[in-house]
Length: 240
Image (cartoon, rainbow, N blue to C red):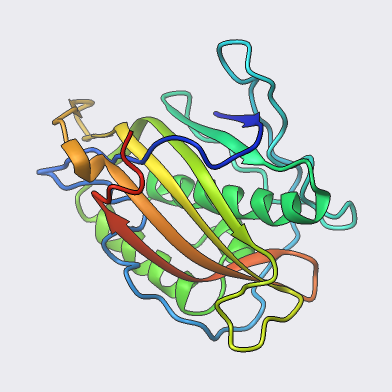
């Protein structure tokens, strides 16, 4: 389940994963993806339908994560998370179509990782669609490592404070088709559930707040794929 609130974007707090003793769900990628690098070919696949979302709570304006993004000629994978696992994107869109395309694909990439964690495998159409190169390899390694715990994510995760660079100003020569995106993830209500159905809700304090720094590039098929990703857990940049 996913909700999106529109707005000026970039204001508010962090992301948590539950402990599994299980071990933490890990900032969806925090452990394995500290330094994923460049490279890789376009690996998008277009064999899926549009994804669904639910209205944002508390009367906040909501919009489908897919609406501002996908070029109509290429449908995005249909990622449907379990009812006990919910995402929310606060202030995620800018109402500038060129930027919202990037933000939409980047947001859906996060859902693709959660879906892979639930399935216990990163060999999914969504992961192949939204990740490429070393970033995709690192997602696969992370999901395989987490699958060994036999636990799955459950609860609520919030994405907020997106900071988009279009084009990517970090490149020596900024070019079209490249973007940088930093954002915060609040995992304070994201936990893990074991095979017996027991949920680990151990408080994680500052570690529940994660900063993501990502790089994306536009594939030949019109998909903004994440090719580089780094995370910083417990950072003051993302705490409330």
